[in-house]
Image 1 (tube, rainbow over the protein chains, first blue to last red):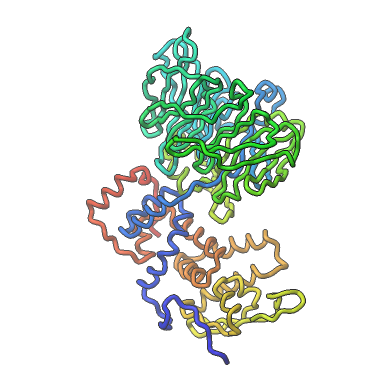
Image 2: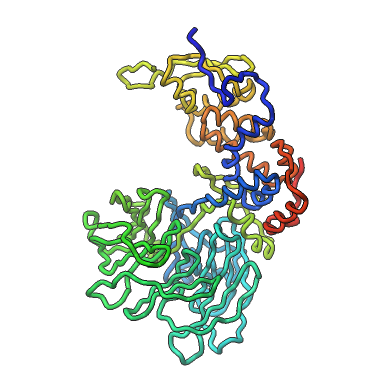
Length: 413
Length: 167
């Protein structure tokens, strides 16, 4: 017999009995694999196991990367039609090609009039389509929800709400904020105020000083600790607001197309901690630049160049830009006629991921929010949304996703 | 080196390997199953050894790993069946058994089994007390009571009144 090959962690030591210290030592590499699969709450508790575990867990939490979006939510642009025809509230398109109805069930207050108003890193803020009603933050993965306290009606006479925007960065804090944009006064045009809800205090702040703006507040994009809005006029300023220090600042913008007077058609969104802007003035997208903002707001640089002339010559809407952990996994989700198409930004390849039927065509006129099912349980519901759990007490099954993509449905305790 | 025939390299399905545990028992494993372990695959590519000694892995653990590898090497089983096998495979296993399993998957570099076992361990651990974790991993508490209080204070949200298990 030829000499044996031996596999051993402890070379030269072939004694079958290993000391527990040795086992513990070999475990250090494996602990990260376990941490990755633990919800955040026990993970935070286990910092107490030992100093070594504390440093391993703290290090592990620091090194977590944002996960790419798993799919998109498309809601119905025509509320009346939805209501009249008993259509679902929205559709969820997963990039693994499944396409599901989303209908708010009885746990959701005012469910018939409810819309998803904004989405941020796995949480949604929902509220009435128009007029009065309850606003709440929910976690679509766990179906846990938390009703926001009523806004006080005192500061200013008119209380038209122009936007409810979520600010939630699970890498920085387990708490989220909701920024409400209110109209200021009855007569002044374009004057607004902020009110901020903090899940840490469970209450709304006082109104901010009024300010002028020409942006569509509902289209705010959360990135880099601030909410960003693009002005739709040539002269208006694009803004960003940090709900922590409450500073409102002006954001530079790429130039408007020479023969256009306003920014009417553009894509603006965040993915994997990058802020993107694409001018889609021509809507044909023969060629286009994908701009990305530098973290210090010094400039927009061209991240990708794309072109769709070789694919199709029809009007085209960008539903979303989804960054992958690697550049070659980054893609656009496009709607061209009745098709939802995935366009790879590096290889310039396209594939149809879904064909819409007649009902579904009502749903896709606006680009909608990415869903982060993949926000793994560790930095999410069980720990993060402690306020949701406490205030509602409703506990549902949750979908958790491990790194290798296996999906388990498990019952929460 | 695996012989190359007209179907290309590494098609020698019928070949097998003998794997010996640290207890000295030997297991006959088909090569198609063995190569699912990255460590074993490397050895089989480099050398002609047909007897591989694993000085870190005991009989009981090795038998489980081999059952896993053989199932996953079976082309006749659908992916769904393999997934339900994985669930069955870890369900009801003692934490101690899982510890040795996960160490074995590390030595043998069987990534998918490592993930499955780590997931199961995390599921067991998530409702356990810190003291339970210390016992299972044989770790001494090296905090002073003051430092312990400080850690609890920093992550106060993680310490609600929920019942945690100690067994």
